[in-house]
Image (tube, rainbow, N blue to C red; front, side, top):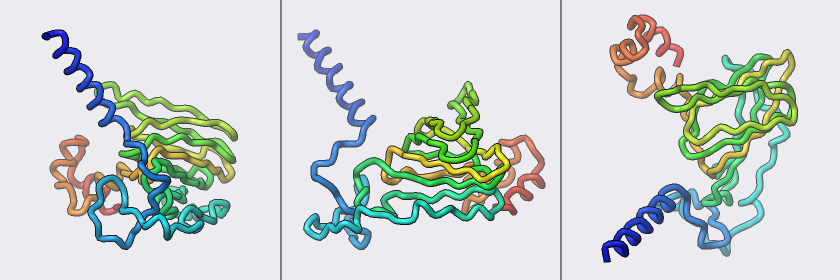
Length: 217
């Protein structure tokens, strides 16, 4: 009896771990996002009546158009997620085109709900991610046209164009709504602001430095 109880407990623990680790498989062909619905959101947006689905719900045009990199960081992300394609709702996948000016960057950021796999289409990129505490190891590499790199879910990562010409990459993400937290924006541009004494002590700098950084975000 004791062995049976132990086996049952183990199976229950494994089952719970699997449920927590993976999104459930869809129980219908698709679930086009109904952005006008006031229904409670559980894991994604409410479903439009499948009889009303049209090709436009599964379509996006314009990924061939270069993003405008005339900004302070010299990078531009063009997302293709559930916002742009309602038919992606519950399917666990999305895309993003990323354009880089010469030496432009996509600043350190995380995707809380997705692993990202990036392919370089043009140019060369220096990319990397940082492992979690306590090691905080930087894993990085210079990529060239046709190279592929993976950023594990939730880890801080970045990209930089290391060429004198424009660069382009295409990313696939394992969520229809991967989310993004740009580290500098989140820390120095929080609304309301994180108290400057908290940030000053955390970064071991004077409050005037924190104030200067907060002013930029």
